[in-house]
Image (cartoon, rainbow, N blue to C red; front, side):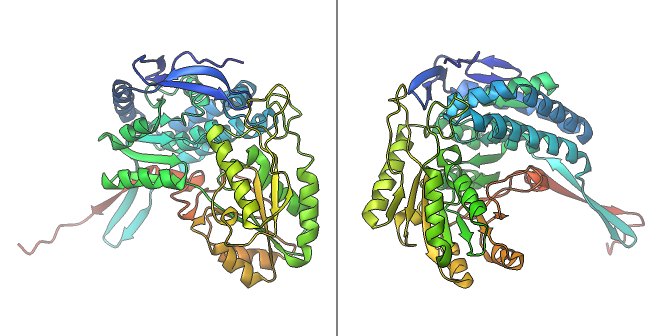
Amino acid sequence: MKAQPKGSHFIDGRYVDDAAGDPLEVIHPATGEIIARLNAATPAIVEAAIASAKIAQIAWARLRPLERGRVLRRAADLLRARNDEIARIETLDTGKPIQETLVADPASAADALEFLGGIVAGFNGEFVELGGAFGYTRREALGVTVGIGAWNYPIQGAGWKSAPALAMGNAMVFKPSENTPLSALALAEIYIEAGLPPGLFNVVQGFGAVGHALVSHPDVAKVSLTGSVPTGRKVLGLAGSLMKHATMELGGKSPLIVFDDADLENAVSGAMLGNFYSAGQVCSNGTRVFVQENLHDRFVERVTARAKTIRLGDPLDPDTQMGPVINKTQYDKIVGYIDIGRNEGATLACGGGAPKLQGFENGFFIEPTVFAHVRDDMRIAREEIFGPVMAVLSFRGEDEVVTRANDSEFGLSAGVFTRDMARAHRVIGEIKAGSCWINTYNVCPPELPFGGFKQSGIGRENALESLRHFSQVKAVYVETGDVVSPY
């Protein structure tokens, strides 16, 4: 079950290491087994990564966008060709079931590379008529950028961040989460094979100190982070103090609203996807499930019955539907919130346990858990748990549920299930969230931007919005006549 890479870091087209770096052990969440040993980046590694990126970026930015996009599209094809291999790496690294990673992880990264690589040639500035003169704007690269990934979707995060950065002519130094450092190295290999010049996508490993060193480096123009709200505040504060561009894709406590005219099975399916996929470790999850009172009891009955059938087990077994959570820290946090829910008076409809599976006694498994009769003031309804814990709340009418749904510091996502499409669009129009769904949940195609309102973040990933966030605008005024001067 080993997954030892050729080196800890990938810089200037090759694997490098520095034994002086702090040890970084990679743990398989299903067994607690160490599957790889790496070293965190030393200051010398950080400097080497940024220096090579700075040099490579100059020539890369001068290429036609069509040429840059061609490299990204080749990389997308290679990602798909190596899908099974990278999916296995993701499963070992994250504990997510292989049935998920085979369809959702490398594939999502490949989609982003393909879409942005194909559309960047048509992403241009504007012509402005000014009478006897005219003006135009140019979209130009920022320079060296930094990507900091999360542990729940490692290869997706590396792809979503690097694709718009590279498409716009930037270089990127990417730091994966210390919990899931492996798949970004595979992406770095693929980029080189696809023809990306060395230095344009470098991977450095490490903990918070490495991220701080990257963001604070004077040659870095932008940081794109996926992480928790507290981490985002720290990184954004540092970037802002240095006048750097920043994209923050942070956490959420998103509402999923089910009206009583909704198709019950579809609504239950959406809630299941929005709470138990990836063992609930998805930032956009709809963990506050508001169900109209006439449908509430039937909804709880069906979601509970279906949750009880979810198969936990070996993530490498194709029949396993839910794996462990990422590590002991997260496991303890989730178990603690389940206890809080019980103590706050919510009804535990199903789950709540932490099973010890045969052969996986050291794994971090938690049962799919559903709480009913949850109140808005309960901590399980207000705080991000980031685990397989669903809170079901009852509501009476539309205005009431919109007000309650918006009563949160977060604003990442939201969903509405109803057959009344006028109401669906009306409610989504009132919800303060950046990524929303009607009659489905957690579908994230690269053609649509992804990101949040309020404390859930700043900026957007994917779609044309991501190209805007990895570029800066230059305005040019062109005079066609004589210059009139009073002097």
